[in-house]
Amino acid sequence: MLLLQQMIVLFILMLIGYFVSKKGYISDATFKQMSWMVVYVACPAMVISGSVNSGKMIAGQELFATLGLTVIVYAVLILIGFITPVVLGVPKDDRGVYKVMMIFSNIGFMGFPLIGSLYGTEALLYAALFQIPFNVLIYTYGILVLKKKSDDDEKLDFKKIMNIGVICCIISIIIALFQIETPTFVKSIVSNLSNLTAPLSMMVIGASLTKIRFRDLFTDVRLLLFCGLKLLVIPVVLLFVLKQFINSDMVLGVCMVILSTPVASMTAMLAQQYDGNYALASKGVAVSTILSVITMPVVAIITGL
Image 1 (cartoon, rainbow, N blue to C red):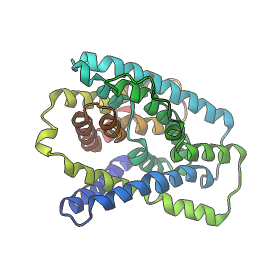
Image 2: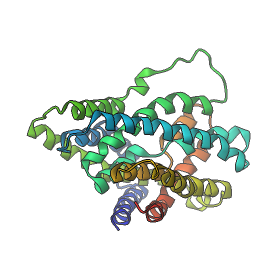
Image 3: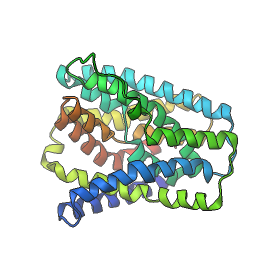
Image 4: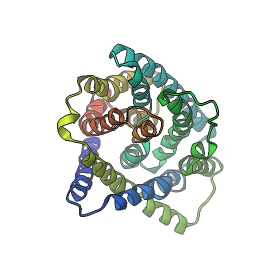
């Protein structure tokens, strides 16, 4: 099974990052620079490669229909995010963290590399459409539910919303819609840079796990139940519903990966910045990342994708 093979590859890359960081062969400062490379160079290049290297014309109607689908998916996840903390009996102070963990998945660091490997560069264009509402929501709704204190003076930061990831998504969509021909050397540069995404991102994730004690990861029963819902139950249910309305195996495959990826690392960063439960968010990222190596192939098998 291709997905299982890819998850094993990503897991091994994550282990390499963990061990070289744990042994001190590569410093935290270097991993921080590697993370910067993923966010600002490799991942944007991977997004653009979806349009310059696909070699297939994509209808505007199909793209906008997929964008509409992403909005619906996030609306459903917001609703589920409201219900889940109540069902799990989460203390009120921590409900914001659980809401954000439910809605936002690790699309950039894990989703894009998997989608590119499983479905080819064309699928990355559809995956990029999920990045636009992701950025808009995480810097608006995400911050709103995490903040414990109301700050009316704080203004919406459009620079954060319109970051390099979203800009490259828009560029990729424009190239695909208008069939803009790009020079061969540009295609080669974009392709080579995009190939850095998987190894760098997974090693960075592995290095981040060294900051958490493994003995504490799997003792929180509520968090484990949450991960079971996020990584297994909800993706399976939503995918069975989506299969009734979507005929494209590629779009369904993209949705499967997006819905099944672990908690976004941005969750922990924003929790720290806006006085949320940083320890809980960090554990959520770590536990869901480790479990996703097993749960993603299971979701694929159950849904037949």
